[in-house]
Image (cartoon, rainbow, N blue to C red; front, side, top):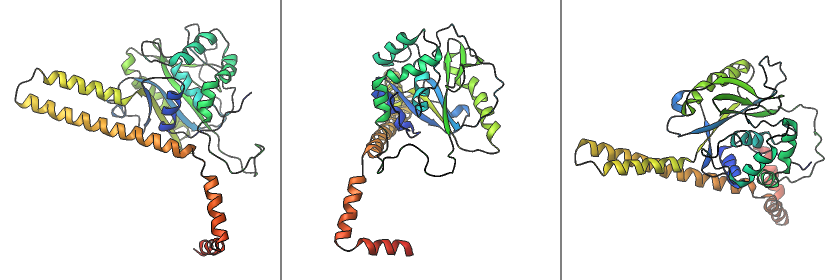
Length: 309
C-alpha cells in the first residue's frame, strides 16, 4: 500500500487539497465556537470536521452496521490519511445538485457504492490524484528515518471525524469505528448544524478535564461566491429604490459586503502564499548558508554567542 504523509490541520491546506482533487466552489473555515452566530453568513454548511486527541474508550452508542440508504462510509485502513478521509466522508455524501465534487470523486463513489466499508477504505488508496494532492503537503525532512520512534516517549495521537447531514439523518462518520453513528433527524438542510452541535459539545465536555486541544472546521460554499451573490442581490434591490433612507441603508450594506469580499480575497491569497512556504524545501539554503558562514570563520562565533544568550 502506498504511503500517505501526515498533513497539517489548517483550513488553507484543506481548501487547496479539495481544489486539487477537482471539487469546485467549496472551502474550509475554522469554527471557534459552537454558538449559532459562528455559522451565520457562511451560506450552506456541507459538513463538519472535528479534530481531537484520540483515546481508547468504550463508546456505548449504537452503530449502524448495515445502511441501505446509499451513505458512504469507509473504515480507516490507510495510515496518516484520516484528515483526507474525513473530507471525503463529507464530499462523497453530497448530492450532485448541492456540491460539484468533480469527475474523480463521482466516479469513485459510483465504483465503490456496493463495497463493504473495509474495502471502501482500501479503495481510497487507489485514488492516485487524491493521494498525490494529499502528499503534496508533506514537509521536507533533512533526514530519512526508518519510521521507528527515536525515543521512548509516547506521542499523542490525534484523529479526525466527520459530521454530515444525509437524507434527513445526521451522521457521525469515524473511520476507526465499525460503522456510522446515527445522531437523529433534521427537518431543514439549512439548519442541520443546530441539531449536531450539542453532540459535539457533549464530546468536548467528556474530555475537558484532561484535554483542551480540539479543532472544528466546516466545509462551506466558497465565501467569495457567497459574497458575490450577496452583492448582486443588493445591487438589484437598489435598482428599484429612489433616494432616501432605504437607499442609504442599501448603500451601507453594499459597502460592507464589498469590504468582506476584499477581506476574503486577501485570506485566500494568504492561504496560497502560506501553502507555497509549507511546501518549499528550505533545507538546501540553510545548509549552504552554514557552509558560507563556516568558510568565513563566523559559524563558531555565532554558535557560541547563541549558547550564551
